[in-house]
Length: 182
Image (cartoon, rainbow, N blue to C red):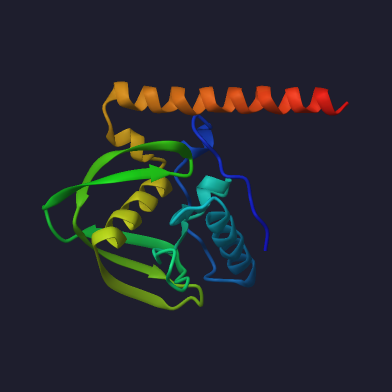
């Protein structure tokens, strides 16, 4: 397993639509999912889509277990969702690809999810609450949509500017440390 780099805005690869996995769940795909899970835990986060590490495949990993609970990783290959209600609820969302930015997004409170799991088994289940929010958020990534795309243009631009500014500051600090070490 390896920790991969997580892409952040404004990287154009985050806007790509991910392609379906063909050929079922293979050892190579399981290795990708293992890397994704390790990367997500390291970040730390609760969900990660393959496109966030630059792999445009319809693959998601997630773990909604709390800090005092045993890890409960979930793997989604070629997931599909169908809203089961028109009831929307606002949830505060964040994203590993938009670090340190949080805002409310309204989403359906329940949805049906179909996918292949880590072993290639077909799963068809109902998602509610945080699970419904998280799977919809990650599914957006597979369509090239970020949670900030659900915000007003002004809020979206502020979020991108905040991430760019943080990157510039980190680069500046890194260069400063390099010079002082030389």
